[in-house]
Length: 294
Image (cartoon, rainbow, N blue to C red):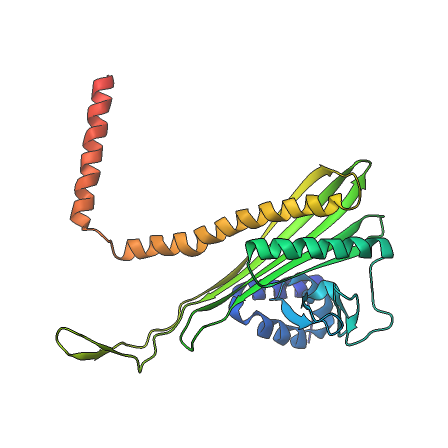
């Protein structure tokens, strides 16, 4: 049996992931890593998965886990800086960067409350070999169904950035990924309705839930002035805020705008004859205006 080169194998795995249902991303990732274990580390570093929530036993606060705060099978908490399960020689930021990490977590915790009104946020920083540093800002909110047939959904934001200081300025590179999942509620088959006027009883049919899921990735770069280390929090915070607003508007257009266009193409709200007459009237008015100009 012949094997493809490592690069071709990784590209094939990523191409397959783009074609598989996004709602089953964790299941698909596990299956592919078991199928090609030699490429598992590189593959996991290229695929964004829904964030997991853990509880910091030392502080009692929730935090998010991903590949950036993982060391082996343990995950580091941004609140206590401890690994769970405990790890004696786990990777950790330098004391100076750890101080900035604490400030960043408090700042983005306020950002989370302002824009999400709930959910969980985490910030992790690490030193780079060239003297700069990098980090990731994680945000997650889950909408749980209020009843068995109610709607549900989740929002996962992963913002990875690099910061390189250049005198009194810093250059930032930001890569943002948003994973959105929305599942519409199902109409239970045993739900009965009563017609008050006629007294006739009728039953709704079972409706399949609408499932809209997907991810979006965007990149940006910017230069900004710095006065001290806390300036990095302000600068990256502004970039992430602007990026999330842009991506949220794009997601709204993709998820709802395109769906609305398809529905309107399938079945018009107004009479098609009326719409045809309106188009003819518009053409007639345009023709008269052009004739008057000439």
